Image (cartoon, rainbow, N blue to C red; front, top):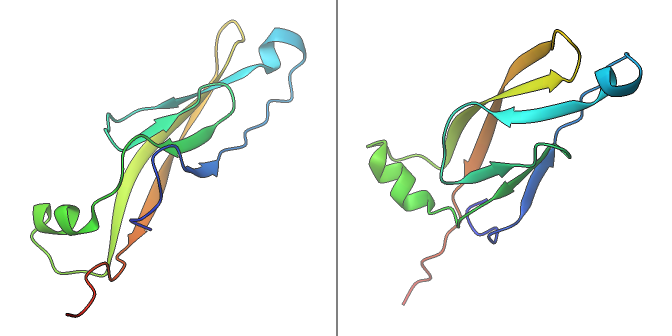
Length: 103
């Protein structure tokens, strides 16, 4: 949700490679640039690099929603020679919180 602090770990990706040794070592890569997230290339942890302002995102998309979906693309790559990789889409669903109390 929009009130999670900077550094909050949203999720941890888990990928497997059935090879042995160096060929089994994998790295995670975020394919689209974003100021919101960082992806740890070794652990697969996705964490926030800044606070999410739902209202600002909503205005940028010119909609009046209670949930916004942001799409990110991830690549997982092994250290084989040649290197093999897979890609997937991650959908981050952000929920609006009522952060304006009545007066």
